[in-house]
Length: 172
Image 1 (cartoon, rainbow, N blue to C red):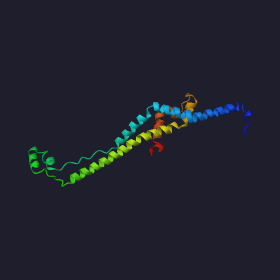
Image 2: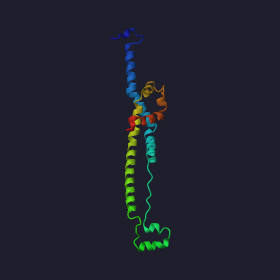
Image 3: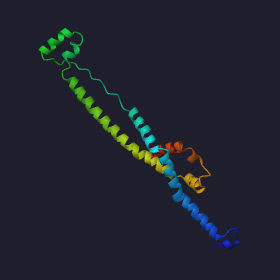
Image 4: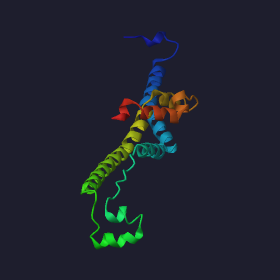
């Protein structure tokens, strides 16, 4: 065994120091990190930013023009509008307009589902970034020094959270 009698400090002080370091790493650091992140309103800010990012990728809807008599002739010559109504407002597109409109409606429905899924993932991504940041040992140094020492990852909290958000842990 290692003899602690030859050291300038007692073995009890070394054990107490080791316990304090362990307490700082496993308890105090994560608690201080979690409370600091909550006070910074990260979850809400992160979600708004990610939702805006997702919405920016939304494809614009395609406009499919109607090819019926009312739309083509009636818009240029309102007097001929009655003529279109008299003969049943025939479709000059041969039904292709209805097919294109149905395809566009289906595409929009798929786009809406994709957007809803991406927006739903923002909550877990933001929470993941907060959890990854809270496990950083810089928080143990910050909490263990009674907040006298502030390492760069703690001082630049937003940057640290954004880096964690972009990490492979939170991108899944």
